[in-house]
Image (cartoon, rainbow, N blue to C red; front, side, top):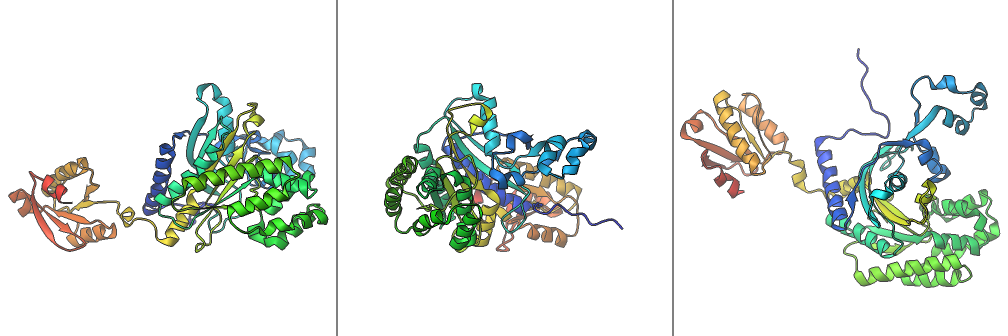
Length: 458
């Protein structure tokens, strides 16, 4: 007996209706990317391992899918290295490549390699799959798509303002109301660590702080203590765990708290510019909210940090995020190139829209017209008619064989076809075709010589 086939955990097959819905989201995102002047690029699904490692922090590096070298890679490894049983020591000997973890680091590599072919500031968008060796759960997959937009070659804060507007434009077009765009700044986080006396523990501090939504304040405090941050420093940070008021109120409180930190003060000034600009410009449907606990563990952010939260009535992690990375290309040899970008979490956006019933009903309709097959002569006439309907932009087909009429109508019904065309022997002799409206059940006859009458009636 043949073994039942399966797919790896954290991956999925997509049915036609699911692909149609995903393409609907992608189409709206791409439309707005291009409206904002972004250009499309693509990069390989896998990169050299050293391109990716060390760019995402310790936790991120563990989630990178390594690709084993081809051939008998094991025989090239020294026995002493095997006996160490240390994966970090073993990786360089058995793996030189890895599936990309995100689109941002490959983009930085792309910019460095093609810098002489690009016009700066360069605005790119990219819609491709990424892979992470994560534990699968609702909204978290091992293979998923990212939809990124980045600008490199400009340090203007207008770019951050524009990216918030881009988020707002996309979610408004998707009719996804109640989305919150969280905003913070790594300079503020560095300033907080400096003021409380934990400047040498910045990474540990930010990684712990970023878990606030998951483990709560007490869990964050304990995580900081376990990672060696002094209790006195943790206590000094206490007022920041519960900042309240408007964005302007929070900025005023941060101004006082970070008064002794040059870097922290600069971060507050940057956020003040962004929030005031967006207050003036206005957002159509999204809410912008400052959140000093937002850290995002990725090591390459140096300025603004963005994270998008789904509407409160949906239990879902972030559906987008991004930030400013002033030195990302520097790790590949290209200095003094500032960048900022955002990402849309396609798969999570899909789940949110599905739960809220936001997909248009027409997406479930893969076919506009089905012609019933009564036999060879009738099918040939139907095929000629279908050619004209397709030229008019209608999704049309002829049922491939002269099966029972009931079976053909059931096929049309299962595919949500709104119109069924009948060209039987009598209709063929009279030079007509009959259109049945599957919703109302009514029928209307048209001449084969003038199908435009039917097309124009829709």
